[in-house]
Length: 419
Image 1 (cartoon, rainbow, N blue to C red):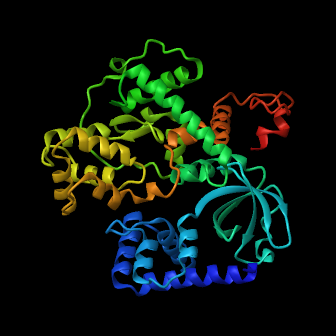
Image 2 (cartoon, rainbow, N blue to C red; image 1 turned 180 degrees about the vertical axis):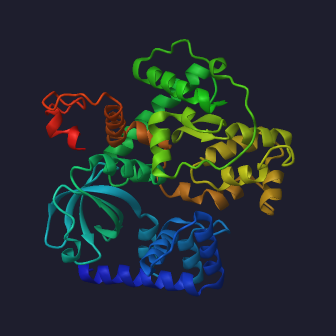
Image 3 (tube, rainbow, N blue to C red; image 1 turned 90 degrees about the horizontal axis):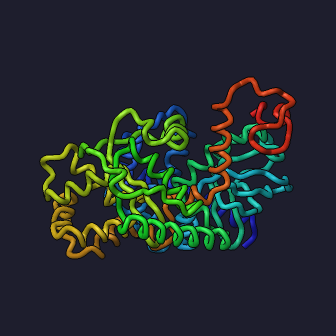
């Protein structure tokens, strides 16, 4: 299919999807609820269109079905190829290496792969994007060609720090993007997962540890040292034991300032104390899961009455894409009351754990998913971001002509001083 025809098909399909959301009564109500929950500020038509596209491509309905799957069910004659392409789209940051007549040659910072990216608009409309600039965009693949479906932001070549922040945020939301179109990266993550799994189980004799957010940073530091050096520093489960207050509340970690605080300042930087679980998933890596202790306590008590926001906690663990289905399977084996409790919360009649996984965790069967911990451990961008954060915390009296503390080999005035 010619590029022009493909571009027209993509645009036409997206217009059809937007019209469908607007005109389908149930989906329109669901979209309004989505806007309300996320507190979006809609001032222009473009703002509304951006929210619609994000809702269509990324979100699930209140009935826990992806919007794209809902559309496919209602429109069985739709082009399944392009719907599948939309489902596999992801946001990331790309560094522009060369500007062609109708495309960019760019490197995806998330998976370190190179792409020829074709925008949906004419290149003349994107004159603000220059060589070596960074663009935050959504990429899709169709018929072995790659397209920029949306462009959200552009960072000049001297705003590498901002580009790295956005890259890591995208990696957290789309961890599968690190291995897409890069088999070498997939093998690297598989190797790291195997190492983490063996080390965790040999050290602790289990695959789950519950602690507090104030001790979580110490655990991660000790475990990272163990992975890197083999020295366990006499660590044990008992070292991270803490008196825990079992409750559930929403963690506001989506804002950039909170994200950076958590990524570089640690979990103890939170204003409120809460419990954290470390779950070692043999298939996809080490998960750091807030309120896992609360979730366990609710299952242990077999009641929603005694723990603050117990029902919201159950819903989070069952519906969140950040929680591995293998953890849910483990809990079903540990607690005989698991399925009846889930049925009561969701007003369903699930008969076994397979039905629950099929209903709420279907996306895990589509991609090679790894935990954010494994993804960030193998991310050069995250490593560079932490290095940049450390630089900003150093004294401001570094000489302009001194070697840059980032280790680039350049003088400070020609490197991080301008960043």
